[in-house]
Image 1 (cartoon, rainbow, N blue to C red):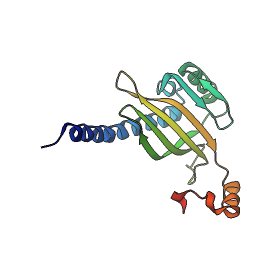
Image 2: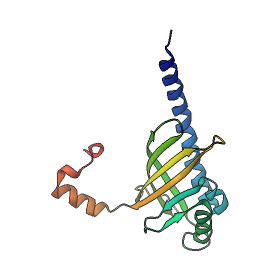
Image 3: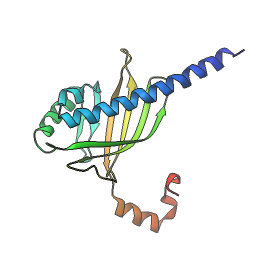
Length: 162
């Protein structure tokens, strides 16, 4: 017979599996909205008060700001591009909050083999049961500088890369 704590832990683990699938679905919908250049669909994947920081350092606050900036991007700078995204890790901090780390990139034509940006998503499950992005941060990878730093100071190499 399972204790209450064991049942709660089992329910949490099962919910986490469901949560991983739900979060992966949100990221896939983000990629699809980008492919369609649908700023409204893209924006709907964020919470009303979400933050969005680009690799240039531009910081947007709120779904409306994120949606309108992407409407401009889709008709200009990134017109005709697609979005590639690879989830590296999903960590849960309770049943309704997760941090997703991944790599991503925009591209034209064939998808690049190496994605040049490291991305962090803070995901929350809202009252309607839907997972949404509460915060997004995008960092441009600098592989040459990273390799130099690893050679000069081997202790900087992350454990996952050793």
